[in-house]
Structure formats: structure tokens, C-alpha cells
Image 1 (cartoon, helix red, strand yellow):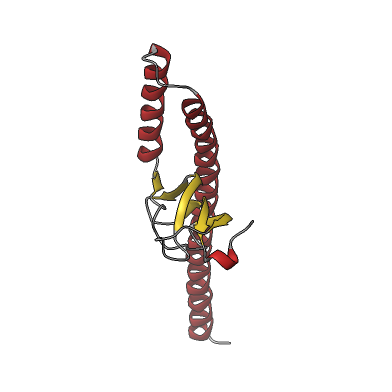
Image 2: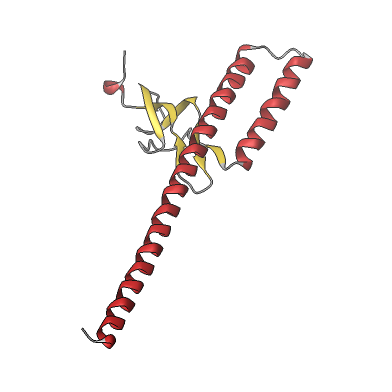
Length: 151
């Protein structure tokens, strides 16, 4: 093999090695982004569970001017701001058409005047990330025709 042929072969190997290195960097970067995204989702879901407990405590307690209630509302407001700052927000479901990507139907009810397949009540809020992806679907009761209602 000539020196010129060896030089060309070495140059091709070098360029392939550079391309392999770039592909590896891109693949590793994608894997890191996926891992960070997964951890972020898990963290946000944990926070949302705490918020569910706060919501339940506030629903179970009567409004009576108690300072405890005002304090709980302030904590909940602050907590919702933290969720929003980290990219998670609840989304509106009542009155919207049922969407299996955003809603988890746990019951059906016939209600005159409501269109079939509309969300009637939310039992547990749904949340979306700032990019629009559903973090957690809402658990909902959906309207249906009288013959499809659950007795």
C-alpha cells in the first residue's frame, strides 16, 4: 500500500471516529434528558399527592373563620405556585368533552341538559406540564344517556 493510500485510509478512520463520537454524545445527551424528565415527573407527582391531601383537608373542614383554615389556604396557594414554577399546572375538565388522554373516567351519570360524553365532575384534578404533556389525568364522572347510566 502506498503512503498516499495509507493516508486516505487513516483520514477515513479518523472521520468515522469523530462521527461515532458525535453520535455517542447525542445519544448520551438524549438519555440524560430522558432521565431528568422522568425524575422531574416523579417529583411533581409526589408534590401533587400532597396537594390532594391539602384539598381533602380543606373540603372536610367547615368555613368558620378559623385561622387554621386561612393558614391552610395560604399553604395550598403557595404550594400551587411552586408546582407552577416547576412546570406543572392543573387543567380544567368540567364541561369539556371526555378525552382519554387527559381524563380517567371512573363513573357515568345521566344528567338532562348535558351533552353525552361531557365531564360532569372532577374527583381528582389532572395536571399538565408546561410543554402541554399530561402529567396526571383527571379522574372524572362523565355524562351519558339514561340507558347507559349506572344504576
